[in-house]
Length: 490
Image (cartoon, rainbow, N blue to C red):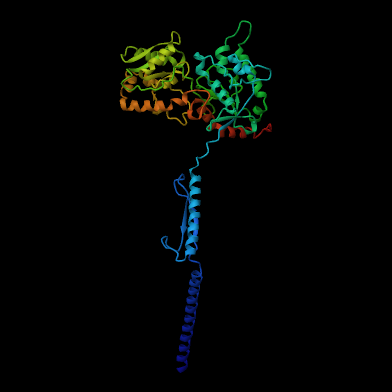
């Protein structure tokens, strides 16, 4: 009995000893951690940089210390060191702040390789002749070949784009925000530009001379096809990175079917098959407006007495039947001007005056879905009413035309009372809002040369930017073209 009690007591004492030992070890471990932490210099700080939001705000340096910010070191030497450290911190902060204020770099301009083609394809069509053999381009610092103007001017995008590329090479071009620059090495280029004035060629030389079997325009198209397809740049990409101007609906009528892998610059797609030209592959560029720009326009809703304006050819082919039907519906309305018109007898200046005195200007499909009339209306700050179901518009991927235009389906426009009811329902406040927006965007449709930094995004720049937005797709197409072909290395 005594032995059993002794054994139990001995077991309890052993358990107590083990517990005491474990407790002692735990206390020693905790104390050792406190000793390590206390040995750390309390004056040490951690400096780090924090980027605040938004991104354009200055970077700030945050100092984390064991001492409160107001605490002052009791030793003068420490205070002196802290002052030096603070001055250094302030200097770094100011440097970072200055760096943050630097303006971000401008987007990289589109790099364009342009063929040095014979003058017969471009400025030679305007009557320009080189002074000596071997000269391809005019010295535009001395003399810019004059464009004939008139109706030819509305499809003159080829003229303005070529001038802009030539100007980009000159030291006189001081622009910091160029949308495109010419490069001399194809391997550096995003696209290849073919400087053929196809619209001018059609306008001037599409008639067949009695002494020739085909027109000079057709001969030039054949020469362009032969020249371009023989170039190593075309063979390298299958032509998919080439930019070719075909703004007049009848221009490049035969060559388009041989050069269709390229990106065309067009007015619309009314006379193209989808295989040859389409909105995904090609660029829609504005017409050059013929009426003068309305500078310092102080007119308003009440100072434009005409409600709805149209003047032009009324009997047209194909989709143009809508013009004829609308003429019969609207010709007797008192506040509507709907009449025949042409360029004869100062027709352009009269149309400009009529648009400036009108609240709304009709843009109705004719032989093709688009016409220069839309851009004349924009230049006159007359709200366009677009009746053209198949129209494609310039820069519509970045520009919302609903802010300054009214779209009406042809079927609705031909319903009696529908069109007038629609425009009469637009009151002064809504009209003024659209009118103000129209004045803001009119520059996007205006061609001018030379461009300046303060000009902003005028027509030429907007077109180059539209090409640049398609450049990634072009690169993908070129890579796909080269899958099963041995690339022609430049």
